[in-house]
Length: 69
Image (cartoon, rainbow, N blue to C red; front, side, top):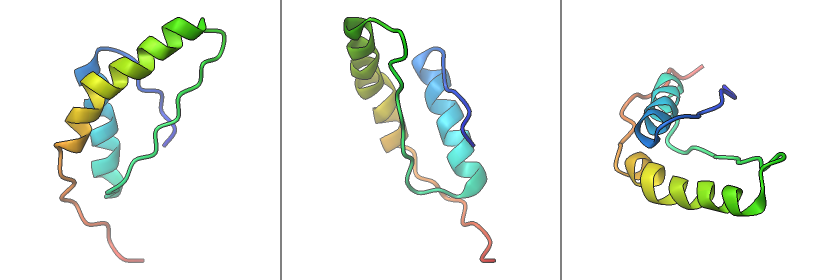
C-alpha cells in the first residue's frame, strides 16, 4: 500500500514492518516528499529516519513467505 507513515520513530517502523509482513516483502522502497516543508526541516526528517527508523527496519527479518500465484 501507499499508506503514509507519520509519527514517532517506533510507530513509523512498526507500520512499515507490518505492511512488509502482510505482503511478504523482503525489500521496502521508501519515498520522502518534501512538499512545502523548508529544506532544513526536510533534511532533519531524512536524518531522523536514517538514525531512528532505518535501524529498526534493518534489524527485523521478514519471515512470512507469500503464496505463489
